Image (cartoon, rainbow, N blue to C red; front, side):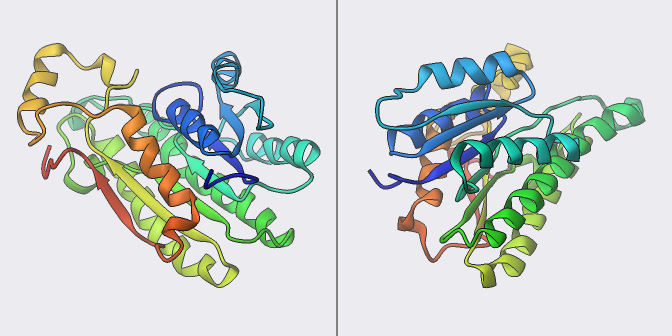
Length: 250
């Protein structure tokens, strides 16, 4: 198994891409730290993982609060005695509305979770990687095709995901000297609890624009996450990988 002996910290692990990432990384041999603002969902994720060969825990985490992120690191160090070498930032929310109707509160909420949360996790956990001299660290941030092209009703979400992509490239430049690789995955439309909120007629419109004529699955995104977490991608850093069924615009 390509990730045997490694430990992975996954945010947004309670559902969707985050949960799928936990399952795939565990399948490939990694110990899993499933972190989510919903502690019950995070525990359910861990319960779904075969525990015979890996040591897995769940943590309640609000990525938008620095105190919560630091507390999560403390628990990780208490459990594993060292920081994880794999960080996967999947936590994300939407608060969709047309730009002229979007409230300041809903704009800020999305930025705080999607962009600020990614920053706080990278800063906190990568500092610990450097201090503990963790070899071959890797960070995988989940962005979005919306961050490249925008999308009607998602000015807040698109801005936050665009920020994640550019922050990924910047972090890769800064952390490469520490042996830490940082990459982003830009999913297209994926069947998750987030897209479950989209009306069926609108889903049909989006699907018609995808060359593969369907939404992706969380597992398809998670397989790319596993590749970026492994030594098979050892010379990939600062990259943004589109995983969108060939879709070039929203």
